[in-house]
Length: 207
Length: 257
Image 1 (cartoon, each protein chain N blue to C red):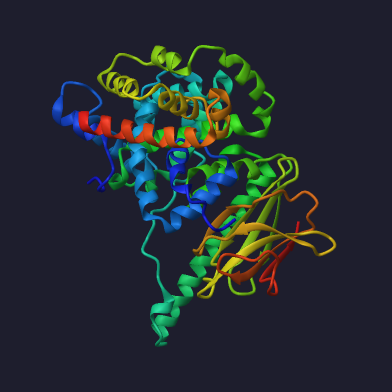
Image 2 (cartoon, rainbow over the protein chains, first blue to last red):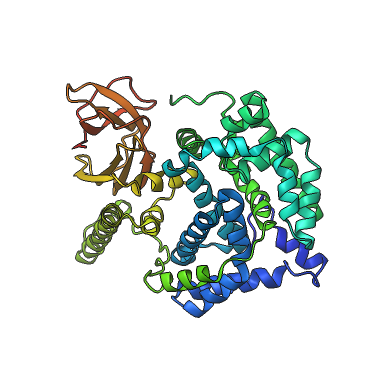
């Protein structure tokens, strides 16, 4: 059911701790709801919305910051999920990951779009001296999954962690990250890659 | 431009995080077509990046639920992918086979019409969510699709369409405001062995500037390199693999933009 080389998180947590929510049951439920949605079942999509909206809106909000724009991004993403529901392929990963990939792409698109260009300077300025990681840590809730991800993030070096969080949560390009961290571009590229490899392996092993 | 830099493999992390700009993402996607190791690596990062997304939760406002559930009533979910007919595998010509091929061809042209209709709907309505209709046609990976929707939803986006003389159709959508253009192809005949479709901006004096390449495949959506501002037309020529500095063959497509 999972292609070789793909690390799935929910598989593991289902087998190790069935009492904690984000396991196989949630995954199976989302898979079934997506299948029903692909046949035009609006009630199924409403259930899917209820199961995922805090994560979808949370991610949109985290990346674009502005609540009104985050709402638009989340809405666009949901309409895309509905439309593309047939194209979700269980073999390629867990359904929540698939949904969040759509949300993230649209959120990043939004912060980089022309309308947002003028706000970029503000975003730079607003960064201040607190690393983004702290904000992420504050925003997370104390579930098993988030604890695992937080722990995995702490296993990274500081540059790896900052590069990854600025790119993923901040929507910054690797060039911008290089400038923000005052680290050469080549270093940023390798830190992002090394950091993701470590994150992938840590999450996979602990699952 | 086409020869990959030696360290292009190290871009897999930045790509998976969505941290490449549109040009870099397009270049990396071209690299992915020929590099199985990078493809596997990018796939393997999927769960890690998604788990970064999973840990940020904020209760959504109630009106979002209402807007989403109202919105889906107006959108038809896509049909499933079905195994494509391949007319080239058959050389005999019984009546039944010919009918099958014709149906396959009709399906291809209606698919094209869907693409074109989607592009025009976007241009006309400017409704952001309609880009989904186009982006689903785009089997390229995420970052390009995002950049592409930005072009398609630009307030000043314009679309022109044309027939590719070697087979297939194409549409070019330009936004002067963003200084970007997108080429969409449908039913494009494969480039002969050892050659590639190269895209050009042509100015009114006929001078050509390379704008990138059309990736292999019947359907493609390409964010052109460079800006359409000042260009009079967009052309496509067949060039030796690796591309040319200037067009060396007669264009298979030329549309005024």
